[in-house]
Picture 1: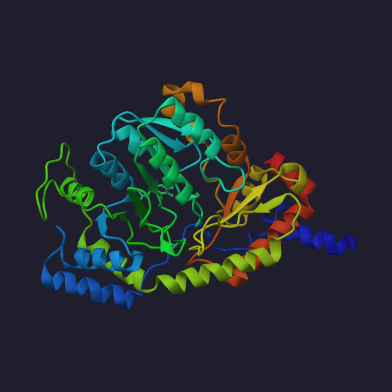
Picture 2: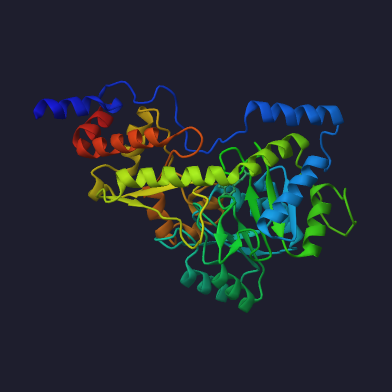
Length: 403
Ligand SMILES: *Cc1c(COP(=O)(O)O)cnc(C)c1O
């Protein structure tokens, strides 16, 4: 018995064994098309010698995105961050924008670039999305727009949010960087509020390497966005104040088209990986698995847990370190909250003590690898190591302390 325990302990890298994975296993999706299909698309670009400026592949991708999402306008951009900034400009927002304090830095930075003032709103501890009670309080104090964030392949209660934004007469737009392929109320994410922004970064489920897209049913807004994106550029000229270069190149669009073709298979694959994690980790004390909330259909872009130190036996940071030593590159994402991130913590120190739920989630949340670089065996192995770490938490903690 004793011997068996020792053997199990010895399979943990933190206790001196070889890591269970030879190579780093990342969290992000990294689904890429086959070399053959990639080569074929790129050869065609070189034959056409049409490399950017709203070429045929970018046009085709925009039409396919509109069709897939059932939205009037898809405007492809070079990444989601610049998409969010251009959207704030196109919506002609001035002043203060309510956004959740629990999100990726790009959400807040998009406001900073646009000279807008973020108003940080705490989040719901169950869904990690905007807390509606806090939101109402902030709206009553006055705001000029709401920037919602849809996380983890789930969605904030977007219908309720649309109603609230409508009743206060402020525009609502969403950072849906995590949400491509999600379905809410029989409609695809991408059709809600004034507009939404998706990221097609390589770590997301729909990828063009770098890239993104803004979706809206408002044709006038779309026209302004096209003018801002390409320093006037294509289609009808409308008056805009600032312009930029946020164009998607043909190389990006080629990868995007291939990614879109295979998207349903990848979502299904991720769903199975989710289930494989849950088979091992459901019911583990101190580990709360986040189920994508508020959607009829998720894209399963992330597998997210919260670690309660007392229940689990290790803190999130300890678990994260022990996993990294196994070459399992789990992430504490997002950390810290926006209200504790520079420059916002320096510019708006009044928020430091007003976001208790975000603070708590930031200290507990962890993402485990999903996507192209793991299969069901790898997931079972990751799950097994987590169980071992819990079982031998005292030794793990000691070993980490020595290091
Ligand atoms: C990835 C991400 C972004 C930024 O997307 P880019 O395409 O890399 O600019 C913005 N917000 C959230 C929530 C993200 O996860």
